[in-house]
Image (cartoon, rainbow over the protein chains, first blue to last red):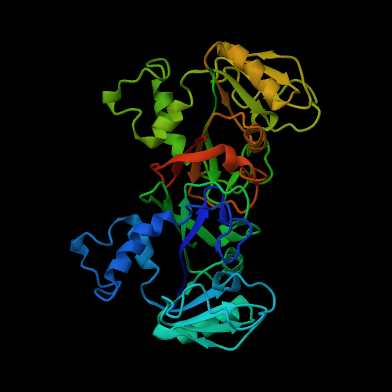
Length: 225
Length: 225
């Protein structure tokens, strides 16, 4: 059975998934500098591997891919057949698309390699990219988006990206099977809070584990009760 | 220089310091069962020591008082000369005191052993208890309460207890020198949030450390920049 998984979703110690004023030159907004520092070593390792060993085929004895940070980073890329994200994760454009020139944050070869379903109130034609990624734009409820993504995933799991509002919406409907959060050791003061208006969450979910990362961060796994 | 310290202030993973409907038989309200599980072993050790070795005079080689949980529990009792707390930490009574029969949660011998300043809009006469604790009831601003407590502390530090609103008020005014938080691996869904309306916090404070405890909790230290 395909599962809907959130991985590496990072919040500040005071609970914010993004800061204020998200925009093209600040995808996560202001006030959250260092939010993703925990994954920089993993990114470097991946970059140095490009063209050589694919992710998921590392030699565990090599010393690569060890530690909670790297394990968490890699887990989010294992057995994923489709991705769902909110429009704010796809780009900084709000409201009507002025044109179709915005093609995502990731350049012409996004790191997905599968169908990515972008939830938006402003649908546009599907966007095939290099490397197997196609962005589809859906104006649907979370459950319907999940059904579409599950079909596209062909038996593998579906990963739910951000932003904050998107994760909240799927959590509120109990659609998330596993939520891997990272708590970064920074304070934002303001922004978009993940745990807001989720009064029903404790009845459906529980914290399964909390383990420290390498930069004063913590990895938290939340699962269904 | 005397410092104002918060110790062992525990919040849920989703950010709540108390749940809903605080009352006499639920001092922290509903939805936060297990919030303080991390300190139960420390409490047991203290109880088993009563009448024998005072806290702070443990033999480190005995194995007692080790681990992040125990260390955090004990740190809150070291070099403290006075305590400040909000009225909600003193008791469940709200509004006017119907009489003076409520004498705190802690019985006739509270574990403070020094002057405790209770902030309230409904002052009442000071209340001397057994064991050196005297409760004083103040209707003052945080800075004035701190001045009173600092004087009473006689050169030692002042500990700021809860509840949530009290800690927030002192943080908002930048009066807290050190904030030791515990993040418990539970979800409350609703209640009183610690990091609410503290937009200015990141300018004045930073996260200094995050270390895991023994029950899936994390200890976080926040200090001035």
